[in-house]
Length: 232
Image (cartoon, rainbow, N blue to C red; front, side, top):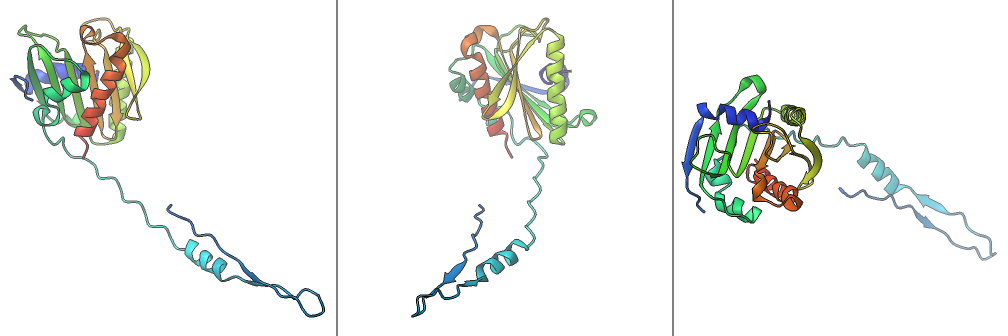
């Protein structure tokens, strides 16, 4: 099941809030010092080499390197959509203005898939039941980076199995995937997904909101904003 699709289906059991938008190390080189002199007879005197620097370097290189500190694992997402991704900032990032209301879902932990929690931020919702938001940002946090990558791969496979075309993109230097042209409800909305450490981000934007020529770049900017704001 995909990141976004699963989050939508579980949203009925989660807390949903709606409201209007508010806005080198440097290596030391060993230096060999030499000294020479000429005798009065014109023959060269014997040159001597002082190995002090070499010996010093050998002693320095023999010291064990300090171990790198282990990365600190996140335990939760600190904040909600209002505080981390306010509507006005998402609008400014995308260069659009949403019509309708905003809503967000705060997900509970799901041990069976290793998910510690998630946020679904939905912008541009009309009054119709089951309406698709103009833009949706889903951020999920998992126990390990490996679980995050596994969920990302599952989402890509799910969309491809429903007819979506996959293309590579970049989210601030991190590889992402853009999926478009899927068949069926939920799969026909363009989706960009990326995993970074323990987090996955999924950004979906309805066709009418952005021109196809700029859609991928704009969605990547939104995903980068979500990664930045949810960083530990």
